[in-house]
Length: 269
Image (cartoon, rainbow, N blue to C red; front, side):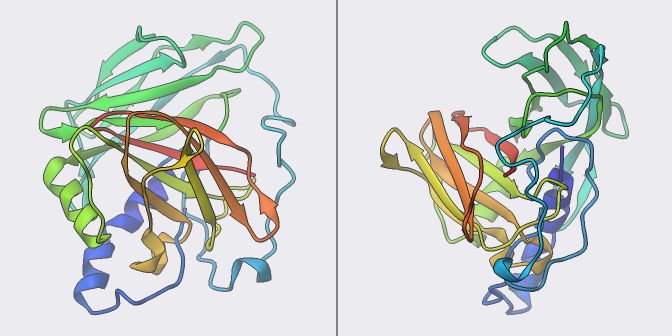
């Protein structure tokens, strides 16, 4: 899931930074809401401006171009509770695996006492699997985790976020944003092809030809969150997202905003 877990780890630092009076820190974010590819660990921080960095854009527009397709794919990960100041294992989260476009779960499991979960192996039948994960727990906002691209190999480290409504409201407040009941929110990690966080992205978020949502650069509050963004207050429905960094236009993603849920994903070139 790329840098999604790195994004969550960065979020717990935001309140401390704000409390210390550093909310004017304009350095950009570290990487995200996890897309489902294998590398979850955070890369070293990127301190210079995006145009001064050397990034790997070899995969631009060609997802899974050099990866051999596995016969079966196993997806697993860790459910964690974000308490604004800490991340903790989240047991008893109902975690469901879906094929995109199908409302019937392929498999449903409950996270263990350490937050871990794993689904039954899924057969590829010669094609990459277009899957997503949904985690739900009483009192928390549902978290929908979408891969950056269809899966071609095992994904063992997918992070699922158990986010209480109170913590979510705190994040909205830190962003000086707003969230209308019945609207969704989307978390994004902007990375290069190797999962390196990229700061300074410009995001286009539209439904049809209309701009929607309220984009928040998490890195504006915490340097550790470079490359991570939240888009609050998005009406339910298909939402087209395009990231631009310098002259590099990332692949277009269409993400469904879900009412009163938080969707997380990774944006790749």
